Length: 151
Image (cartoon, rainbow, N blue to C red; front, side, top):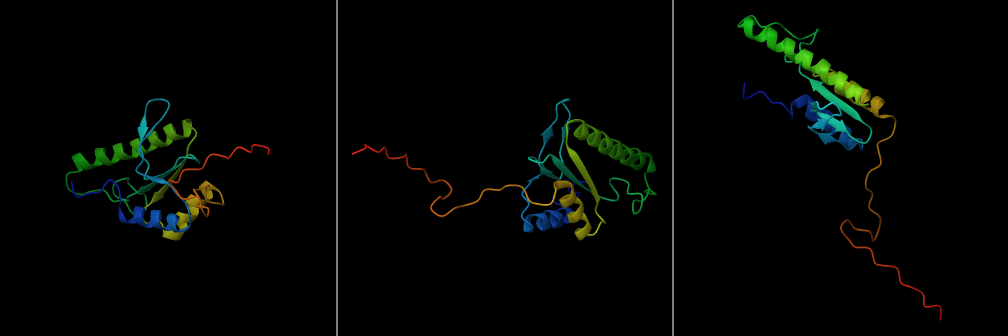
């Protein structure tokens, strides 16, 4: 199971790329330590707006539409997939209790619909970002004001 990715899956990369193109800035795979001591790692986190986005795989998170029950080693896979779903629900509850809004998307959701769901959760406009003004380069030091001697 080492080949199964925890982060940077194709649907997640596509969503992050589309959101970035629209001007949204976020943290990827950012660990959040919540007030009750629980830790959650959303795929995409908008920390300033407190929105956590998860892109769930149909097999690993038991999608009701596309998820399938394995026919081999059911004694192993059935409890494992059930634990994944329970962990998702616990993470949702912990984030909601901490004041976060949770957006869960299935990997089969079309990209345009996924972007629309995230944008709706964030509001209509991207958050404030760093802007660069002429003569105010990143890393440049501001000159102290010159005192007027009054002469």
